[in-house]
Length: 308
Image (cartoon, rainbow, N blue to C red):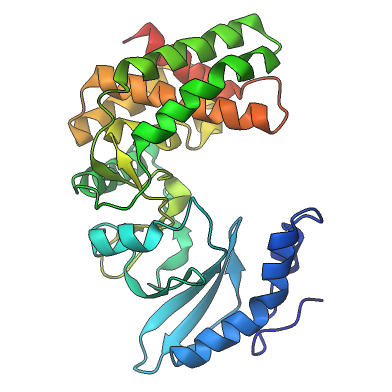
């Protein structure tokens, strides 16, 4: 049993997510109870409910000394999350959760408390949910990125370098061709990577109901780049609902049209950078030992290629 944090247990499911070969993760997990207690003391916080968690962070509902509801977010310092405080400060609560305090040494953040029981995925009307997401994306990507964040130009160049060696791992020649087409689309845009502040992972479950605004984004992985690189997580939201329409290509294009119109994007560029996200996911899957692409990714890429 993981030791409690002032009476709050670290969820066993969270502890189990750190595999036996993740030595750094296990060490961080062992230090987590003391780390949480230290920040409760340092920031004069009181626990206000059971801990929750995502894939890589533990979130404790807390109350500040002045009665302000907040959450204490504890996570390892990782490349994909280390830019989050800078991004949150730059957005300053405009469509996104407010950052109240931050410790750069440990990555610990004190955040505005939102209603975790009401993600945007709880809205039954997909069109209404997609409009909320599109509005938030438009607001977030309207902001110029500050210096110091990872850049899409570097990430895209690295993907193109990895592609030739990765593609042969796919069993299906048609999927190999699709990945190469995605890489070609990225290569065409490499000289125009964009300069906007991107969230990089905005989907329905990363949008929560709030009091300051009806809906606010959480968990950004900030990146400097083109807003077209933001669309794929929205396109494959609730994929079972897309399939249930009986015409997934049409459903994908309807979502794509709604998003590109709301963000006022050039469709060609948005298509190219969305194919870039398909390429990125394919490379990650191949790195994890997979030999086939995710069917949703294939459907999205094929739909966009047929109508660009």
